[in-house]
Image 1 (cartoon, rainbow, N blue to C red):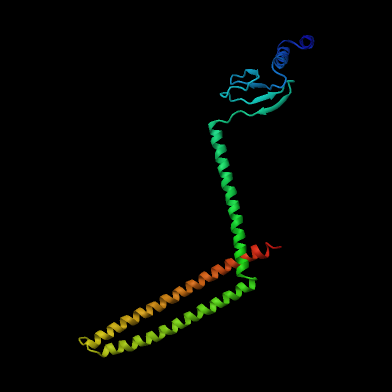
Image 2: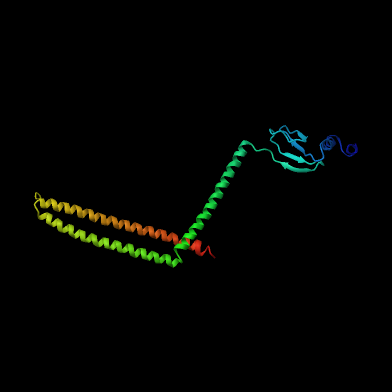
Length: 220
């Protein structure tokens, strides 16, 4: 063969043998067939018209019928690599879901704020109205407690002058107990009103920050 002769004149031993082997292999397979080059676990180079055995952990190089490399097929992943790749895919999916959920939450929050307020001043006006309303409730409760305290003091003086063995003393004790319960309810009511006002301030503070961030700055 002419190619082989040229190789003998210009090249020596092992190199020419490998070149000749590739040429002969290319001539032995159909014109459109792929040629696979792979190295087994012992380091031996193989040329074949079929892929390497699946048990090999080496990469594969695919050549066309003219001896040009067409692609490199990576070595199959190990069990640990497959597990790692699966974990990375799952984490990427979770990150994507979190990002999409955050975008949806942001859009819903912006819509809510636009429907509730026309401006930051409107939020402050609402805060003032809530403070005045709850403040009035607290003041009325404080005035009611003062009235109850005066009534309790009056009945206590009556009890001090009554005979403990009489039915009148029992009535005074019952009235005092009822007054103590009403005073306790008034105090509990005011605590609830103050907690409510604190929660309103916290919510309106959040609305202010989000309105500025999502509506004002977001629309620029």
